[in-house]
Length: 399
Image (tube, rainbow, N blue to C red; front, side, top):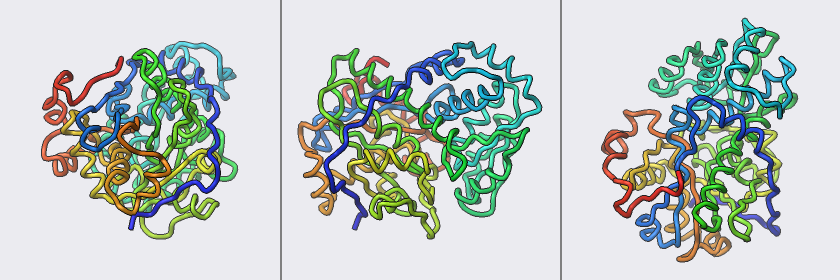
């Protein structure tokens, strides 16, 4: 039986979050370009829905994940406070780098399952600062090496992601700024800025749909983890279309902390090990600052098996989209929704059918190349090259 949650009260329309400051900042980062919004027509037909859109974050600012958006904006805000830089003050990246040199020696620290920590390390390197990244025991070697390649000192913590978070919190002092994408009592500003940074993805989707004269999605399915990205998505009112988009959250069965919290109407910490192959979602406690957005705006939630994630990786690869285990989780949720008998009540509540437009996010590429080849049966480059952009299986919408 797949664990599920369905809202038991009338939905609350999302508010229009102002992501202009973050988007303007991201646009001036070296290498910024809008990521592709892909329409997978063959897969939509196979699943019996009207349209399937995938926002492909497998390559964002030269990193294989969307996490750099939240990390970079949170770093901009956190360091801005130390150099008296207003949130809406326009500044080039070169000038920002020059001004933060007055803070040296300074280290940026973070706990991570891989992608967030690598993003923090990349930003620290770009700004001429040090970085210290804490990872839970069992983190894939490829992910650890990628973080080290950014110039970071990596510390492996004996325990879970939550243990790494607790250890990172101890590092905060005058010479170390903790950039966490989750929160705890007394530490709320930085995680809130991380959420705000993710709004760039949603603003891009708005622009891409409007430029293509396409309506907004009926349903958006989003990975939850600690809930930071899901909070950004859930609170976003898509500009294209008049309807209120339904938000569906997805987590691994082994790490469904948000789902458990939604079902119990309070933040709940998991006690069992979080050991899904969806490493970026192996979290035991929802973020304190993400929780209000999740409980207010998530319309349904479900937990998926690792095998569903593998199926979704293969399906995306057949369409030329490279997705790691966590990156494919949104589509994995859709695969479960359209096929599992016990999810019929959610399908009915969401009116999921032949006319439904669904948006999912590929939040990461093949961050563990060995695991990707084992699951998909091909290297990431081979999977991407196997499908041309004009063969009918995949099309880009104003990338």
